[in-house]
Image (cartoon, rainbow, N blue to C red):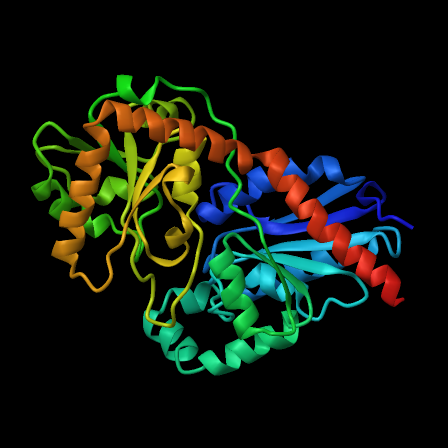
Length: 375
């Protein structure tokens, strides 16, 4: 008998909107997949390192209650897993008798810091002194929790890394959702400027701004926006906009011709392959990106509206120089810029909410079909 997701309750676990980029993703995602199900119930959490042990346990109890409140055999659980998302991870640990899937935001592991409660996060020495030497244990724990479940990565390279790490896991790749945003001016009518956008933390490349500024001609302005950017230092040709939402966010993207994504290694634990929420955000505003080829960014190309700079073993100064040359080649060439705009439009449609929902719907339907056959 064919599986009809409209007969199912989806129990959804993820960070609240505004709680890191994963929280923003979660809001767009759950709204996109909601029409697939008969009922959607949610348990939203704070960001990594913001919750106590008691709060983690409360989330775990609440998820169990949401599962128990559904019709037996007609409940599906889906969680958003990120490096320090302890509440989501421990909420699905040991959850049996119900199909569980998860999106892995920092593959190959769903979680890298399984003990990152508020207390641990506040003490850097404890945080890394605990987690770094116990990496083999945390990887094994995750294998026990999710080893035979279905995991979804937001890139093919991320999916491949999960499969290599956890061979028994069923893995799918679905590109990062691109949300709806207002249509802005055509790229060639926007100011001759590039943007740096996102939440400031290690590996995002904000430390490259000054180097790139030195390599750019004076007529190309850099504008910087996102959570935490207000603490950065501006200067001639570098405008610090700070956090933006709503009309202010629209105005920021309307003021740049491209967004620069100079990602590098995020942490010293291992190579990870996160998809970029900043890329998806830029694409939502029909804005191309200039990026490094770090991690999942390597899968992008001009057909996706991305000018990818292959950095190899270049040092930071060389990376900045290469990015600056790519920036100028794009924002100073109206014909090329317009062509990139057309590519962005096509990629945006392919990764829209409805297309993302269709892809996840196939993953879930396949899972539930296999489960019904094995019963």
